[in-house]
Structure formats: C-alpha cells, structure tokens
Length: 164
Image (tube, rainbow, N blue to C red):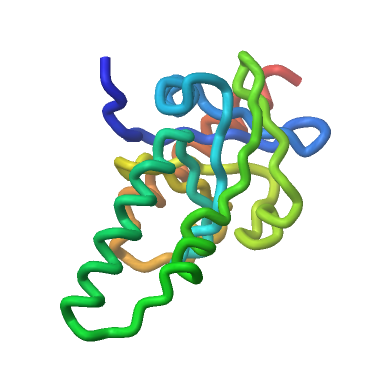
C-alpha cells in the first residue's frame, strides 16, 4: 500500500531521559514513508509547533522548490533557491525504536516550547506536534484540535493516576 499521509490525533507525555513516544498511528505512517525508523522533525514556518514526517518527503521538497522557483520567475519576483532550500531541508533526522521512543533534540524543544507532553495532529503530508498550552492559545480555527488535545491529555492523566 502506498503512503496515504498523516491523519488523526494522539498525545504522548514526556518520558524518562527526555524521551517521547511516537504514537502507533503516526509510527506506522513514518515507518512506511521512511523505509525504517527515522522521524524528520522541524519547526513549523508559521505556528509555534513542530512538524514531523518520513524521509520520503525529501523528493516532495525538491519538487516544491521547483514549483516555487517557476512561479516566482513567471511573476517576475526574486527567488533565492538556496535560502529556501536551507529552510525546507533544515529538519533533524531522529531515530526511534520499535516502541516509538525517540529523544527530542533540545533545540527543537526550545523552539516550540515543548514541555511535559506532545499533542500530535495529522496534517496530510506531515503532522504537527504541539505543547498543549501553546495549542490552547491558538485562535478559534483550532477549536477541534484544542478539544481533542484536552481530551487526550485528560485521558493520559487519568491513566497515570490509575497506575500509581
């Protein structure tokens, strides 16, 4: 089956040693799109969150550069392909184990204000990863994601309480 994109929602509390767990729904999609256990992470261009995707997106990014360059040339605008390429390809490749555990690089945690948990939101070609408090500060267009996040965080808290 061909890679069908990222959809759904999940939550992962921070674990020991600064590790998070890539939820099964996203883990399978990343594995399918990476031919292995490599998660690509980057800061989102506009929102205060991270994006994640598999290695197969590299080809898509090259095609995006071509489209952007062609459009800007047609419109008579300056286009710095090297700068744009350095923005698009500035992602970090992070390995994850069979259980989906991965270590979040400190610079990415800082850039997206990642704290004690990650909310995952599918977005087709990639998925976003949010600090729930940061997501909660977003506008009304994010109400569905905020509601899903709040429910998943509450479920995770209740599960932790039952284990203690």
